[in-house]
Image 1: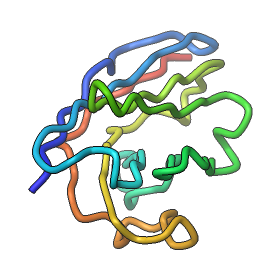
Image 2: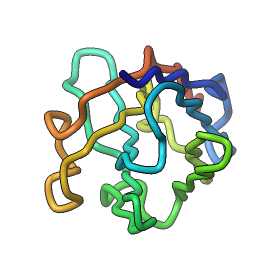
Image 3: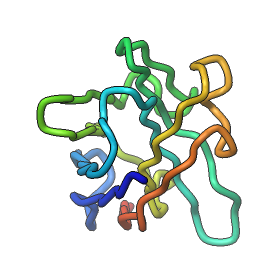
Length: 124
């Protein structure tokens, strides 16, 4: 079992920045691909980014160039730095952990453990 707790969400103006954090506990953190997904009101859960065990990364097109995912295995933490935020980034952001290979890690079903989410609201 892995427990994931997100933090760092909040209300920010368009063009601002936020750094989301995800703290993991339980099984060894370093073996998991870590992903971030988001869900806006009335929409399905959407892939944002992942970082593999070898620190390979992948970003959804709408956040590419504005976001950076990183991990600190010593601290069991994964981070999502988001810059130049837009109102359409407003959503609940979820951290996830999975053991599937990176080639399938852009879909929610590739992940076994999920956090409770943190709200990000971007005002125009």
